[in-house]
Length: 523
View 1: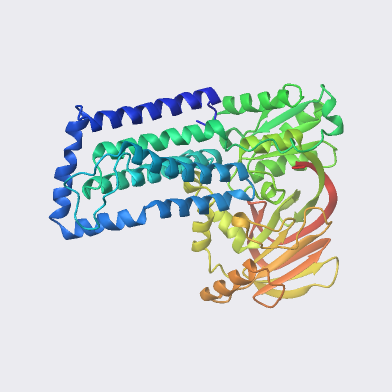
View 2: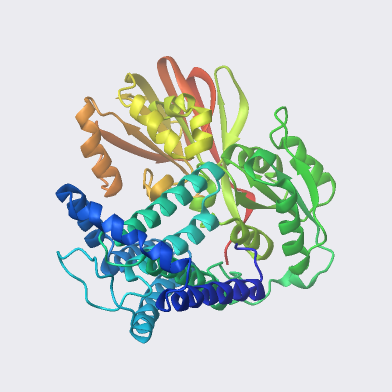
């Protein structure tokens, strides 16, 4: 639906509006089979009239899905989108509001009377075609479905969302018929009218993000026609490799790049070899699409080469992309990679027992947070995304505390107790949680946080302090900052780097290397 041309969207909208008009004409003139179907409403309302609990249930549905509830939900969705996706926010709110206004004028123009068998409680006397409740809930479901299509990567979650929205529309449709407020044709006409409005809204004002570079002058090298781009793709992170290739190739050539070369990761090589091959090809930009693990492998291989990396977030966490303000919508992220500006960010070198020298870009951890990563069920993760980490966290809340020693910038070791210790190059987790609010990707420092909730209920004040960014430190929450950090524990602990579990061990040694990597960010 998002890939339809404006002409196709207009054809769909016109066809649906024509169908709505045809249903209305057939209903008003009593043409079969519409007139026959409308009589079903009489039997349905009889069932409602004979059962008090049924009438109460449908009345609750009626009140809870009236126009003010529809507009209120649209406002909330638009508010959530407006900061990073203003076009999508405007689309959601404007389509819902204008559809309800136009429907009000349409119902007065048609002036069809309500069914004679309408439930007498809270009797409605206004004209009935098309149904206001059905129109409102259908247009709301339609614009939310568009948003889901844009931003939800996982097919299973999208299907779940579509199913829930469809069931909601059917529930409201049944409510209108069982209360006798509308003929079935009123309800169907309202749903068809709303669907036409969704398509017409997309044709007039697309919710897709405009290129972020439109408002900026071209970069100095944008006049060159020989710029080379290589793409490193984790194929399991996109629904269709061929569609993704076509999208990137089209956008790259339109932005003045040569046709991309392609490198697909494998189980044996999650990105390092592909990044080095891209470097050998003489690529000016390497675009990487995958999760945090794939991004880390590619960035590590290209650190210090001067080759910029464009990140297309395709994983569950996407923490580096989030902290660089790279949009999660694939087309918008590709646009940033192709037309954005370069930013030098820090890399953190890591070593430790039972661990080959490596590095990270986002975070490293020992204890509870690493237990969360290792405890995630991959099958559940494929279905529900980052919520799988929430389920794993709930199971690991009372992960045993550990005794540890920490040295910052080669100072003397200090002793602590904690359930988890996290060393971060970025400050924010999913849902914009500010675990390390002072962390910055280009300050030449790493930030450390120790969390030690001694009892189950201690997580509540800890969560409040994290979310409110309180600077106070104590045994519950302690923070440190430095160029280098060494952490030692009294026994083997689970460990993670950028969300990937590594071997258990007792020590991590980390040092920040300033400005080691170039990444593409919005201008």
